[in-house]
Image 1: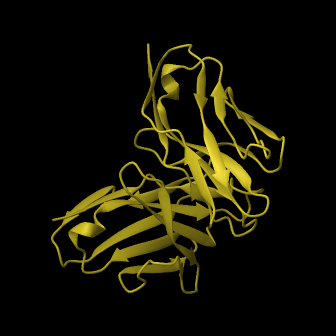
Image 2: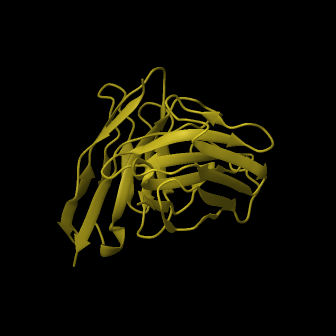
Length: 113
Length: 119
């Protein structure tokens, strides 16, 4: 079945550091890939997405590129801020229209000033 | 953006009692809502898909008589954990699908979750 594997946390970085959170997937067909972010006390929010190979999703300085050859969708940001502290979830969907999402375990990110 | 609320945010109950969790879409009509369960350090597991006016579709391994889902209106879905036991303690999250929002993935808006502890 479909699955998502993302790096375990927690991850602690200093402000302005470079961030990478790895995500790889297993899926039948051609999935759409997503990164969701959950800030403390809030619901998951869509951060970015990519729907086909080589697409790059970007938002709020975060980027992730859909790599079909390596089945990966790593999240990156060049310079993190304290406000980026949150839990990040990688997810995929192979049911266009059905919108069932398969999530990774989540990575807790803490940015220290 | 679209807002989804859950109530209560946390609940503690005695073993054997039933607990109802509400999920509301506050500023849009949700034809479909999803219920997830999250264990510590694990991913969100889809429990069921709830469609307004019809029976919920449960994922394999989820007891439908244990987890009753009612999607009585376009803005409200409820999850009732019946005869709760300590192993039902978990974090329950709902999401609501806005049919007017375009594209895969960004149609779903998530609630903040409900922490259930069964003593």
